[in-house]
Image (cartoon, rainbow, N blue to C red; front, side, top):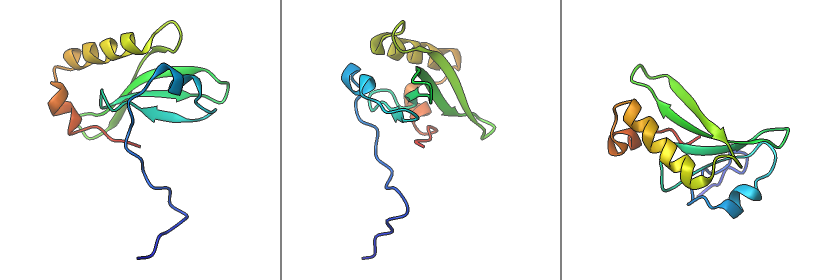
Length: 102
């Protein structure tokens, strides 16, 4: 079996914790295993933001910014994620099928 070292192996999202978020490197992005589609991104400036990524019904990849890490805790981000699912009128189970882990 040949392994291509040029392509990174996609990893499944792990359960996010405050410690994992605090240790994120610049320009890193991570997903949460508990809430498919909930992600946190650390920008080049070091600013960390929670957002929700989903595939819309028209096939377009969309993101909804939930808030900055700090004022918005991980627990509150998960609640905001659930609220966004309700606003989109999708159940979490239906939404999980359309999430793209990039």
